[in-house]
Image 1 (cartoon, rainbow, N blue to C red):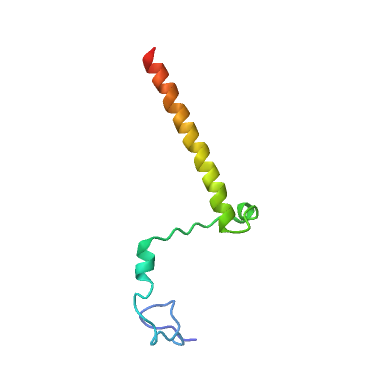
Image 2: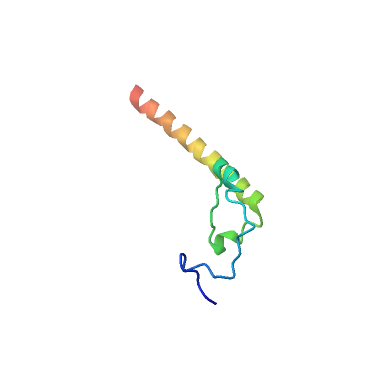
Length: 79
């Protein structure tokens, strides 16, 4: 298996002559969020919907904590 001169990771048998440059560029530019989850955590989430549901629940808790924290700061300033 010979390597191509310009890129040591590309083998000569790779054929991109039928490829279209930038075919998915627009979709990628619109936004991608790929997160790699460690296997021990991934075991609790069978699919992306379960991950999103868990993160939405966590986000709601964080938001409640922020609001509670802001309320206590206001009380301290009023004293």
